[in-house]
Length: 337
Image (cartoon, rainbow, N blue to C red; front, side, top):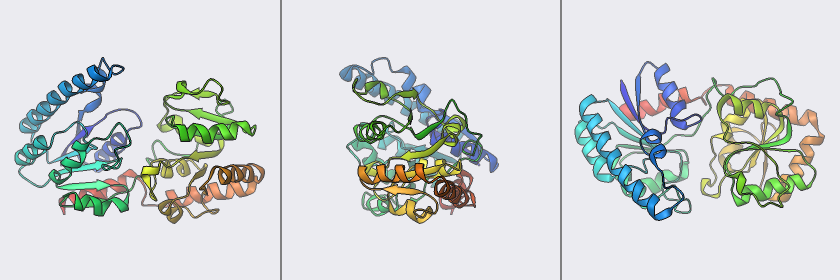
């Protein structure tokens, strides 16, 4: 099968893990890359009005170039990730060009969340125009159906064994609690609370330069993914995972990536995570900052309990069924079924 991925061809992106899995299954994969065609061409990101006008221009060009490419190459499947760049009219024309029900979307965010800048009304309007709409949160399947999706399908995240695996601890990366991710006020408050308790916090990610100058946090590095992130996780006693409110009772990519490195994940308590990784046996959870701090103290003090839970998490995640290879098999079964 010839598969055209519409998304970002960048390190750590969901698209990269899926592309590698599809290729390993014997399919030919190509990108229509939003990063090189839109992101790197944007010169006015810091000027809202100019940025909006510039994005609109690049967006129109991107839609036309995608239509031209599909018409010329006739892929068997167009797999879109999120699709904020695409117009509903473009999707309709793509379905006509493909001549078969093989236009799919896997959205790593909620299409109904307007609290974030990376989501807009066009995403919801586009929902009915995909033959299959994959979503990582089972609670969003019915809302997608109500929004007009002819085939909403649940597909959780996973891990990539080539990138997420245990490594030898590195003293230069060592920390008692590590966090890899972007800066948000909630995350900054939680991490600062740990740091004020004289807990060694290892912090990597984006936008942390915006920290309050009085913050006790020290940023160790920028955006990190893949094997580099696995080394950080393997060198920490505890990996903190903060589930965003819009993820509800579901999970995120770290849910699988952290345990795959045999690290102890301490995460916001959610239904899905506890089902995969039982509390105390395969991961640790919290609901309040006070409980988070108590859990950190407990597992830093009790090395045996920490090692047992970390091993349990690794065993459950890697026992089978949670790789991107597994997810792509499921995706193709749904799309072609």
